[in-house]
Length: 198
Image (cartoon, rainbow, N blue to C red; front, side, top):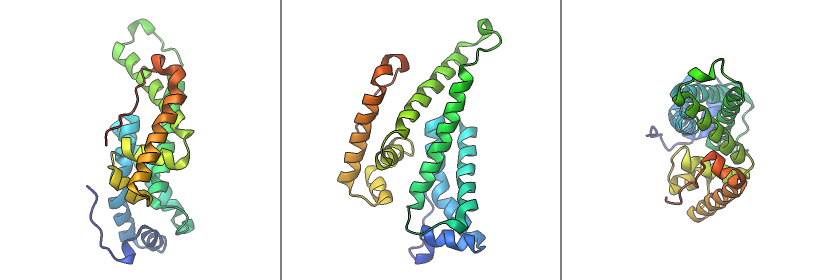
């Protein structure tokens, strides 16, 4: 659960980033408490690996700390920026897994079935997330928040400053686009539609 924050202006993301850039370590703690759990949930969902998910979360937050002085308030929601950074970091890792899976292991005869299953799962994930990258930004963000960060539709609406109906429409269009993009490989990937339940 996210740590509850005071409603004052200083607790707004842009204000907290500015405070951190000015040397306020407490602002960094508040931002981490507010956003790191969602980033971690996203990375867990995409990577299915706890250690890698924690690495991605740390890297995403480090990128925020390194860029705090250049952060321009109002350009983008910090939560959206962090989710995009984390999703891209996850996609990079999935692509590396896929490249590594193309290298023949030294002794295939001794390879355990579970290892082969993990490679196949990595290939499916890489294909899915490559398709996600081709979605329009808003569709991708809404779908990632729904299915990987496991946020409810009202939570997504609040996070993206959209109506619930607009979020439902974005998610529906994103699902259809993914289905079309992955259709040629459905049988091979074992891909199934993301559910429509909310």
